[in-house]
Length: 331
Length: 216
Image (tube, rainbow over all chains, first blue to last red; front, side, top):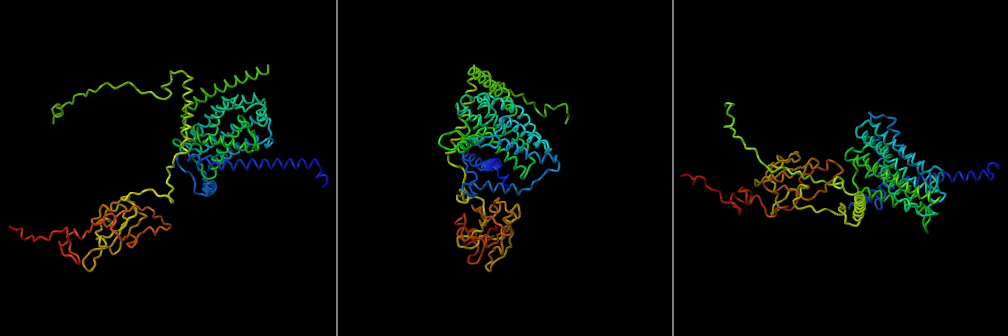
């Protein structure tokens, strides 16, 4: 007993509890924000479209989230008999799991991160690549033409966008000298927010972020006007809910990443770090929603042209300039 | 008819001459800007993107198009085709003469009634039933009605929890007023004899003619 409560063990146990607490906090916070985004997106989209949006259930319609959740939980969870059953069931969980795993390495405030991974940014890029499998497999296993086309588009979109998404971040990594997200924020504390020296990188990453979350103007994966619902046409009940929550978690993730990489993460005067982080993240989530209310969907070839002819050269140019500046500064 | 003389039967129509089709196809979008220098094109694209977002955000301050229904109500014009009523004439008597025309005109067969006569010989429906779970509010019954008795009103709030409650009986349908036609009184113009009024004695009626005096 006395051996168990030795000082070293106590420290270890405390650290373990602290770790568990962080995990739970981040998990609950992210899922709550993602659920809240259902309400936020509907209200904000209505606001800019001269409507009210859900305003009946609870104050300001806030309990709409609860109502939607209950509704979707009690819906029939139908697996089509013509589908590839095992893949069909696994696919929706993949999108949520990868998005949640990415949040492990995002520092919410100073020292407030689940895993302070040295290859954090690479980990996130890897996870976002894995998330596309969810969409592709969902489209493939549904054995439906709309799903299949949606899945194929997702694959093509990934091939076009993963490339310059990674490249656009290399500039930040070069400036900060680290893949660790906490280090990148710390480096911004020493110099300035990287949105200024890395403006091209920021724009390119923003565009890639829209493509990554498969939202308007890059939502041709689910293009409801042509493909019914794209890759999740055959999904119902909570499996569809997982896709939806996964999308909102992905929006939160991309916004959090933009804030961390280009807008100094938790840095800011007066308020605590977490609050600054949340405010900045919410701003970018708002941008995501406003953009959804503004732009039409890009055509298939336009998406490819934008990716390969505009964004890729732009990110390469950005990388070249950044490299030259860093080398000149070092020499 | 001999097939070797078609021209006579059907004179050849001379080929129409119309002006040459224009070749000026209006080119818009990125094709129109293809030859132009790159930097202004990019600038315009970015500018229009930002302006678009600005316009969208500015709509947050414009007035809402939504009508918050249970609290607010849209204006329904007087001729709106809603709940069906049976009206009364200015004297307060039932207008309906139970002619079955509405029932016959109804495309979904939702109107049922039974005719009877009172002691003065005036026809009226013994019972009158409209099944509003079938009614499509087409207004054909109103068009068919010779006495303006059956009328559609601007009332649409008739939801029920139980389906049998959608069946309206005569006491549910009959209203106390004349509806849309305030002065119309069928028996004042019909030329029919009812209790209290002989044939041709009302204001818009001519006295009955003795057909025999028309004989030469």
